Length: 60
Image (cartoon, rainbow, N blue to C red; front, top):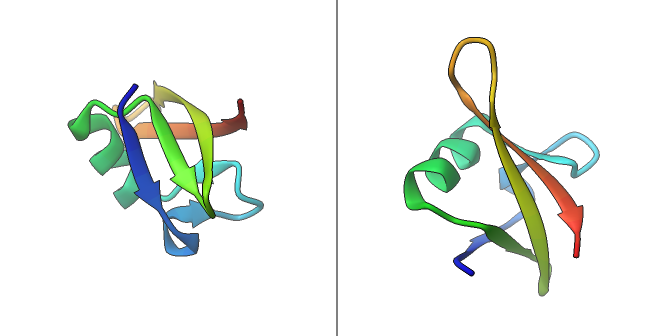
C-alpha cells in the first residue's frame, strides 16, 4: 500500500475526486491510497477519454 498525503487543495467539489494536477501526481507515483485529514482513503485510478488520469476517492 502506497499512500499519498493530500489536502483540501487537491480535492474537487464534494471531495469525491482529486484535482487534475493531484490525479497526475497520483498516477505517476504509483499510489494506491490517499491520506486526507488523518484518514486513509482507498482510491481508484481511471482515465478520461482524453487519456488524463482521474482518481475517485472512497472510504475504506
